[in-house]
Amino acid sequence: MNLTEIALATGFLLSFLMAVALGGNDAASPTANVVGARVLTVRQAVVLFAVFSTIGALTQGYMNMKTIGTGIVPSIDLLGAIVIVVTAFAWIMLCNNWGLEISVTHSIVGSILGYGLAVYGTGGVNWGLTHKIVLSWFMSPVLAALVAFSLHKLLTLMTERYRGLERSMATLIKVALCYSAYAFGANDIANATGVYVTVTGMCLGHPPEGRVMFLLAVFGSIGVVAGGLWLGPKVIETVAFKIIKLSVVSGTAAEITNALVVHMFVTLPYLLIGYGLPISTSLANIGALVGVGLASLGSSGINKRTVALLLTCWVASVFVTAAVTYVIYSMALPIVGTIIEPKL
Image 1 (tube, helix red, strand yellow):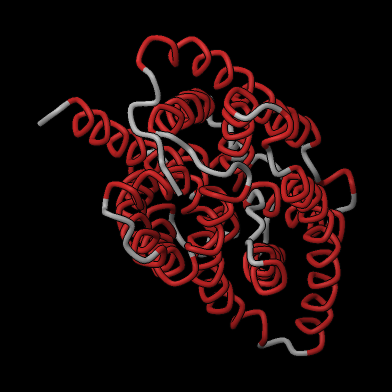
Image 2 (tube, helix red, strand yellow; image 1 turned 60 degrees about the horizontal axis):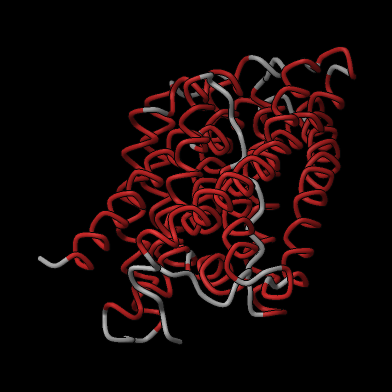
């Protein structure tokens, strides 16, 4: 095995570890509502998450993988892919240890921007697409809060009129969890594997792009499932019990909203502009929780300190990972070179 093969294998190992960190941190987005409503245990919710997030990753994951791999910057060399993943992984694991549900999307996009500035300068970054991604980060939680607020009011009204309906909510929230996990897989698998799209394409002899992305989705899904089962419970408990007190009705409203908003930002932009917009599933879910909290309990029912702490971490993620990636790549490049540079 030559140096290039060793380096490439190391890169894929790091990508797998990134997928583990992703599953550990972001499994909370689809599962926390059903756990907080006390309809399923953490383990039961994570098992459903594992199944349906894998389906979402394999069927629609390519939509955001294209954005992460070749949308923000023209291509990513192997050294860059390794530095991006190491930086984002370290930041995510640090926050996992604190039980904080940060945005993995913000972390990986920040790392890619740091790489892009180091390699291409300001002129080589696709700022048009980047602006759309950042705009979606602001739009998604606001939209989620509005939809969740309205949906909670509607479901509450329906359960008041039809007394037997609330007993059906336990089934509905489980179905919503499956849909939310599917949307998560479609949106988030790119965060673990998207940076290897151009590198893998070259190493496999430029096979069709779809085949590369499918192989990466399979590879990443294994790591996401492992991370969700191993590291997920601690973060799930933070989101499930430390933001608002959830009922079956409010949990159902939040779960449906999260699924709809995440899936919409993956699918509609891809159909319109050719790139999915990778939003923060964490941010969308917190927006949904704030919406149902306002609808059911008013502002007093929301733990503002927890929300403020999470928002601070989300903003910090972009700048911390961008700065660290820029510095590490700039220092490593003169020493080891690009290792493998995609020629597209």
